[in-house]
Image (cartoon, rainbow, N blue to C red; front, side, top):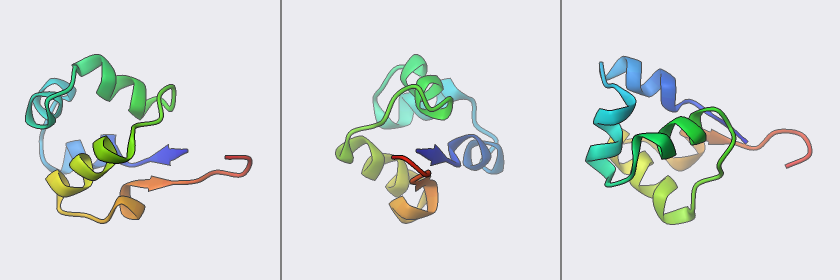
Length: 66
């Protein structure tokens, strides 16, 4: 699964730690999601989308084979 979290963070001038604090997860969780090593739960994906005021599908997209 691909995501645009890094792009959205840049648009909002935020670090991984800033975003992690806002949605109550660790910085390592944000890093792992951005790198595609961790697929967030539905709740976490919704929290991220809500924070950036976007639809989940605007942040997360399935890749071939997902």
